[in-house]
Image 1 (cartoon, rainbow, N blue to C red):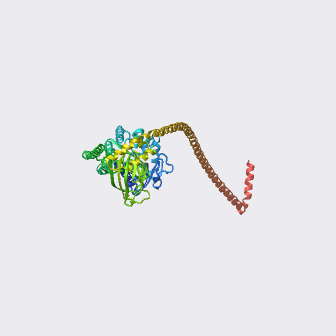
Image 2 (image 1 turned 120 degrees about the horizontal axis):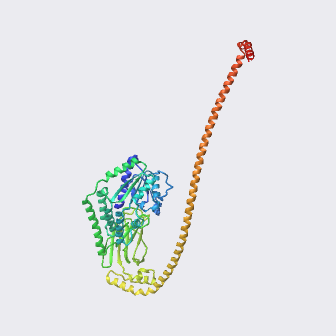
Image 3 (image 1 turned 135 degrees about the vertical axis):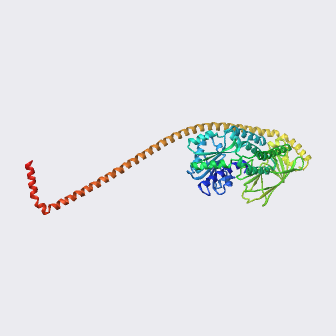
Length: 568
């Protein structure tokens, strides 16, 4: 993985190992939010059970059981504390500002022990460096870098805002900063320069290895590019993480090592300038993909030799170190061309290919398009260890009419007829150009077709305006629905609170009823005891009346009563 990815994933490995020691668990369950098919986290944590997720999944990712489709701002399908650790690396800055609080709360909710978030944060050094790096990329490739331009347009997260958000939600956390912003800028420029170099990737791999071995663990500076936040309810764990990271990354790399690395980076930049001056920059490329989507960063640059001023021979073997879904061979960058005697072989035999935007004439492939592409399907082909690409490429300076309108049959027939006489010398090439120029008479037909296209475009534009108007009305309806939804949600919350209060009152009444029943039971017990006492004394009295002493003293009792009445 490139140095920028290594910074993130290596630091997560260090933090995860601290958690592992703390809870004394060998294999952890981990959820990574916002990943890709390369699964870099699994490379640094091979013994843990990792679930990868993203907002959208490619077909290849959907077929992989390790991937699930998740919105990190709302994960009802994930229960509280379901994963030991939850990770989101360089994702937070791409979350819309109004949803960032939900994102943090959800990560903290589903993490049992810790949630790890890292992202580039807002300050004048990071913002200016990203603008320069994006401009450097645009200088080489003519377009903005898709992630950096999003950072620039949306803005990076402010740390004061993030801290207030965490405090408001009573979430405990630990901060850690890593990656010298000035070194990051130079390394990123070198990476983009490598994209434009023939065989520059080998040199950059060695530079990356130097960074990993000698500089990564010392790459903490006053102005860092990236912040790591560890969220956890365990204060002792956060304290342990803070002390361990501070101790591990306390050393600084020497200026001697930094100067050596910067000289290596300059070598790449100067090499790019030399190749641009020589006109050899990014001529022949083979892109690779795991999911069917080709990306500018995933490619090999093929070497070549010139047979004369216009014909180039490609003859190179490419080692395949993993299983790829497909390859795409771009014979030449930004020019129309003619490819002759194309052969693509592998260790398993000849490899079939598909011409995406050209026409085939015997052993020649004619590309009037300025982005010639040949598709090589490797799916279900088994384990292929290498492929060998051989071809002769003619840079064809076709007239503009041929390049812009290759569908014109008259021009296409003329091209095929001229190709039959194509040789390997400049005279034949000049003849091709001269004869093709004579077919500009087809311009009237082309202009007529262009007018039809413009009329169709106007119709589509009107339809787009109507759709835009409908979209505005839909947005208003959606707003009203949202307000109505909020109203009824508020009503539901009130009813739920009333229901809860009623249940509490019922519980209290039930408790009172139980206490009264207990008192009644006690009173019944007392009455029963008193009845038994009454029966006891009645029995005693009945027995006494039957005794001789009771009968003997009967006269005395009567005399006593008479005396009492007389005295009264």
